Length: 334
Image (cartoon, rainbow, N blue to C red; front, side, top):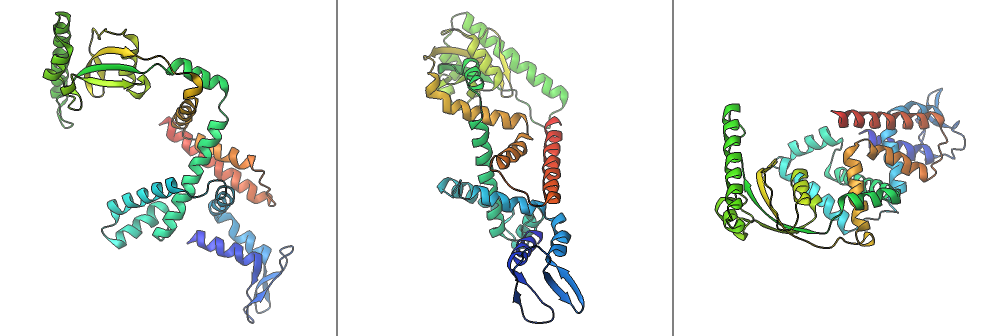
């Protein structure tokens, strides 16, 4: 495998010279001009060998760099162990019934030959994710945090809802789906009409709601942050006053909702929610721009003052990362 090949090769170039004409000899590689291999009268220097193999192994070199940068800063902990174990368990669940198939999947999709190599790869990716999130979070501006607080943080709202799902299967025809949609909308409007006539919201929820998780509680959702809900629901509940219900059904991917806003707590102070805001802003940034992950890794490495003693390797690294960033941008735009 290329990764193992390069690791062995780099170790080899640093310390060992193999001679075809005799026993192994130790070498002191000072400038790369020393002979690495001799084949009769022909000689291959360490520099020649290095120049030959370096072009195909930039990804492995990046892994080695990141191990040096991350392994001490982000030491393995219980959270990492659990995350990696869960990923491997899921892999085994999906593909582990047959050992040959399992190893084939590891090779095809992850480029590794064993579960041990998979674990090493997952641990490095876990540490990279931590570094990326920490770097983005640390570099958030006070304005970004304050703007998010003003625009998105509310006192916890308590609400109840009645959900009318659209009863149509995925393989239903367009006509069948339109018919089911119309039926659900009409039923939701009829429930609002009953509320206008003074009917009890809780009783109507128990009778009509298709949300089995709370219908027996009269549709009570408890207290929540509006941002925890899908956008359409969030906007609707924010626009209501305590004691008001929506006068038109609210359409979401779940169906049609009639929402009753019950209460709202005082808004938390910025200092008490700042950590949560930074976490949400970081996740939002990474979700909005898939290339940000790779851009941040580049900045993180730059912040560690890496010294490149080989200009061609540095160019390969830059070209490689530029390609990853460009591919991620294309993926985000599709």
